Length: 256
Image 1: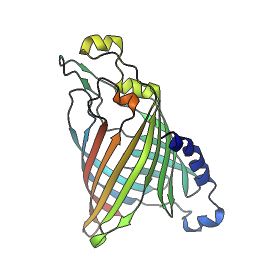
Image 2: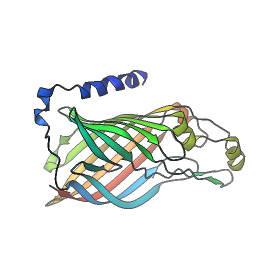
Image 3: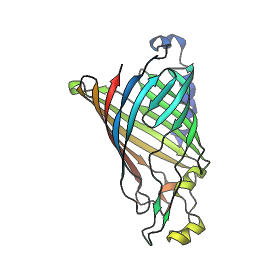
Image 4: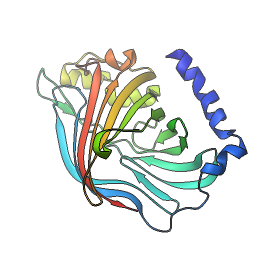
């Protein structure tokens, strides 16, 4: 894990210094109309925090580009200048998870405000797959930082079904992690949990998305992700599993 984190700056520099002759395959123009998928999805997650169980929501689904504006499921942003195989992006992360901590001892609850991560990032669509490198500041109550390095590949299988395997690493600063998973002395008395302060933590994740053509320009997208939490979060008394799960099933129309 430490070697991977040390490699992050070098990977970003390598992406930024992609030779100019390799950029011939990258379109310089931005689409003047919507290109991508828009539809509706059922989102399900289980953070394994306290006594709270699985949460499900029916919400819009989008993965598209329009000029410099883009939406990528849980990310929204603006592309700025060309950089490597993509752009430097001003980006915000949409977090659909609820951080309500409900005590199994007395039923008391602690409500954590949803994070508001805003920052800079880049999506590099290279010949060997796609890389997301993002750095956020949480303008919500944690005031902490969140960093992501994600990689996905694209594999076409039977009957034009496309599979997108994904791996990645996430780092939460101590402020970010402690706000969502820590327990201060007052909250300890309220809920019965032991007080705990969470340090900065690295989390590994893996996921897979399956794209299934239905008819004409309609597709079903199924996505599942598991995040393995680092020891700093796993040692929190409010966490009852070492991992978190996210799943969605979407029906979407593809604009071309």
